[in-house]
Length: 500
Image (tube, rainbow, N blue to C red):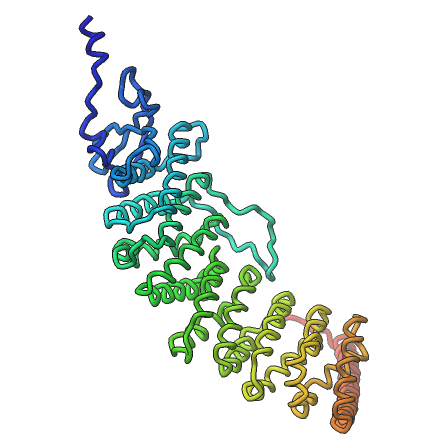
């Protein structure tokens, strides 16, 4: 009888099970591991569809915490919503093991629903978030986002800009929950109720560095969220802007000059594209050095195809901001121009066309001699896509106008390649395009064209004469070698060699 009466008395929760309305006191610093314990009959958690979670602290103590379904925000008065928000944040600070789908199924669903409620709460907030709320939000997203992923073998599987193995990227098994955590944080950063002066104490440089480390994730969905969040932080927290630019710069240095392995280069360049677009004029020396030391060397790695489009956009933005940088950019492209990689050559020609569109005549004249020596080599390429792409430059009106204005310098450089292509190139499309470009120069300046043709014929004649002399010399050498071999044979026959 006494046991039955005691069983009906509500059990007082232990000190470690909670701390009043703020719920259980666990977070980033104290959380290490967890284990599910079955509910005991008559316990408080059983009355509200909760479970008991064993939380292990850094000091080795083991305590039970109630993992329960909390009421919705609409079910409590406004005066208690902030307290309920705290409790939900703490509830979502427990990280479950998603490698075993059958483990903690109920608790995972409770956490997912709670995270969705947090998204709605942050989105519809109509008052400034207090410092305690900011601290708890940052703590909750930190314990969920800044986890230690299982190490994956990292191999550079890109050769000549082409994936050798068409493997799916590694997807995080915890993404159904992690995505909502990212959504909570994104809404929080973007919210007009987030006080920048207050929040910058918790979203500090160390926090930003961790976000930049995460953008190397193999999961493209996570990288997309991180790209958006970092862009929001850059736009909202002006105090962090120089640090973010410097940190991205360091990532590029390590990628180009050390590892050539990073999953988030394209996303970082997309962030930078927007940042560069907002640079004030005149450009600071710091920004110009960033172009020369970080962006242009990004053309060097073999996996350029993975991020070339946003890189090209960033480069073009600089030239559009300051036309005097066109000479620097073009010479940088020539420095890293691929020698044996035809797919990269096509990408370089695509980017070169975009840069030349924004180039003024004065800057064009500074670099046109080395530039058109390289274009002449592209025209002579046996790879038809490279030659064809180089010939397509004449379909761009601004570029064609620059070439027309400086034809007296450019045509003598290009003429040998054009003439040889028109005669001997194996690809019919390349020959047709070459004849069109040749006709443009001939109609534009017949006198210059004829001079170039005469010089080419004279050079060709000299080359033929030189070739004939070399062939005659080789024949004489071969005859002398044959006579010497025959003489040695006869001498050996008459005086055979004997060892001492």
